[in-house]
Amino acid sequence: MEPGYINLRDVSTRLSASPRSVRAYVNRSDNPLPAYRIGGKLLFCWDEVEKWVEQHRVRMPDVNVDVDALIDILEK
Image: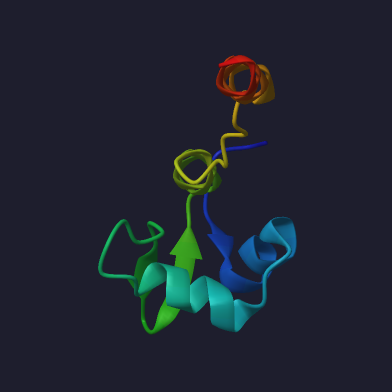
């Protein structure tokens, strides 16, 4: 993607989130979505948005560890 800034609508579309949700992410007190307010308009650097999204990645538990622990418990 070429460097530059994208608007709220484009971020909303790319994140599959409503503009209202994106605004809420920007206004969060803990780890807000990085944005720039120019004349009342929100602008975003997509590279910064991607880094923010990556911080919210859901890590799936290792099922094998849980199964092994359960087997150990049942064998006792």
